[in-house]
Length: 439
Image (tube, rainbow, N blue to C red):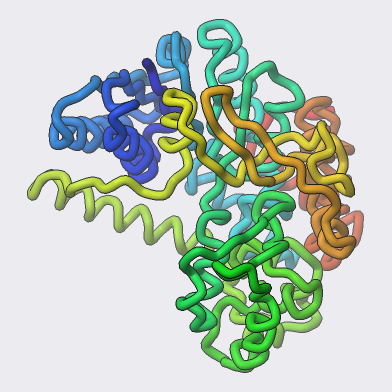
């Protein structure tokens, strides 16, 4: 069996996912094909993953494929393809995504999922995924594409609608949603045996039901603890607790993400909200700089002292592959097309995040029904942007990029239409060859 990792230069993540596979008896004998366009980063990943392979008993083998000219060979015959690419990297593209909008008075926190930063990231990534899809349709047409790249709903939704590649989008936030909430509220005693239902869209899926092991609804206790945390000046998860207070439900992704997915919190006319809600503006660029520095130090230590022992993580990828190979049932929160009206009050062409059962037949999404109307409405403000960005990528029409930016909740609440169009034009010009041509 062959497992291909696209964007293997994302060394920490490649190490975790491939290392997880090497912890599984069903997967460890696989050929692990590492693909990237950066030779130095690919070499670093190979060094670490090969060391893990040897430490785990020497099962399977690791192969490297560098550059577009070798991409098809990296994919040839793969049963599973993992995607974790970042087109344009932190420098220059993430810097552009933050610095150009800042000239127009638009501030962001993360900029990888929604907002003008998410739109631009999708538009430069989708053409690369189209190339992946064409190759996969030729050399591994039955492979399952496991997408970890953001913006999740836009990229997975494009693949699901406009390619023949079997695709599921995977995010870390579902696994840790309720456990993080309980730990922050001092409810750790309710963790064991809890029962939950999470559904919506990526980074804004809703904790619709949360019960203890005896079936008792835990939301009343959760809501009783909210005001204390909201009044704590040092507490950092306030936006999501505000969601509970105003919309009735907690959501999956962090407050620094959700602060920019709506029109409520980052407002130039209300600068005091930034401090009130502990909103970390420009968080993602800082995070990138710190991660790059941390990785250089970690890699140097690894070369000197040897590879650290790898224990299997709770990342979905290896468990999905193991489940499909062995037929052992497994449940995930997956990003899939809503074509079967899994969530009845969201559009059929939207990419939704719902519970999915996995077994020898693959990934099978579960019917959820209707979301609470206010939750669906919040999701729709994001879905509007996602669908228009996908439309822009598909048609290459500039007007759809303008429309996506105009309808983005944060962008539209801060800037007028003419300024939005000027900003989009500026971003497209500054990104240059990282974007296709629009008309």
